[in-house]
Image 1 (cartoon, rainbow, N blue to C red):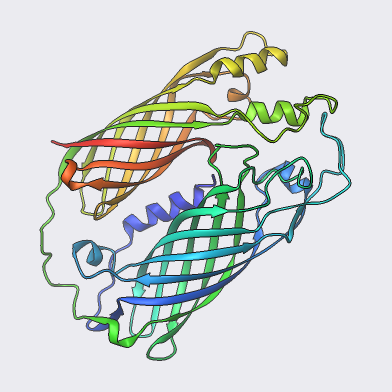
Image 2: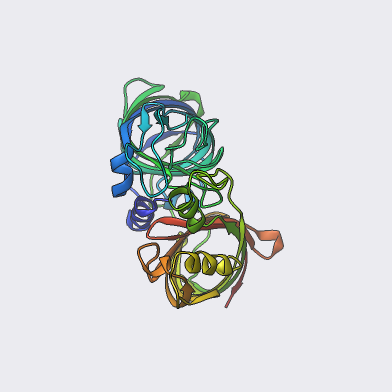
Length: 414
């Protein structure tokens, strides 16, 4: 998955301060519609060659909810949570490989990127607000479905999407102007992403970037008036140290498997440009020491230990392709820097790790991987279970998904 924009906006959220004002009304609920004319991004040399057109459009409708005032609400300058449906019209993005690439031969039709119906949720934070204007950013995630994915029959050059169900991520900047008591117009820049987190192949992921325009309806009778940001918090925050022990279980399909069957398998063989790929297990243990120095965030360091039962299959591919003498081990270990942002029981984690030990064959050190890895995840803690935390996380190399896993964390306050 593409995470550069997520990490930048995530970091920006930690340094932006609440805007002060004397008196303003904040809607508690509202409805928003928006239209996004965008372009599908080609993020590597190969996709720029075989992607012929990049047009895409999206329409979305969402319910906006501003929570009742609490300490987190005031910390984030009275944010809005949204739940909505988005429909991406992607058939304007077309793909065709004009020349043979290895054993992959051209076909006599053009492949298309499938349309997506996505259920999503976003966190929308105002950075500046007055009685008429509002400026801010949003981050969100969800689950999308497409009926048209990579297949051997009529979509063989679609390397972006290889599964019907896909993880959705969005981030953007917006400006909003109130034109009437209950109506506002909205515009901004939207980045969105669909991919399956390496749970299927292909999985380059579809990335979209473009402006958006929209309108919001906010019933005046459902507003809350804020008088000042200077009143004291209900619960003064106490800084503290804590540890996290995290267990992860997930899985992936192999890029090596995709490359072998797509480009190195003769057309006469049944494995030629196949659709279905073996799913392998991926497991991890993480231990971190963190310092929560503000209500909204914490940072710290730790270690990660990984086990992948697919290492022996990578060894077979290396041997078949003449890469003799490569090292292969199912175990990897890294030192990790972690940052967490909190809103009540919800949290988002961003980690950057450097491998102390990793041997995953030829491609792991010839362009497929770097000596570092990234993790991004969304989590929810259960106070009645001693803050036991459950969530999902994607591990990536240079923003390209390596595997997706469910994680359970036990935090211990020191």
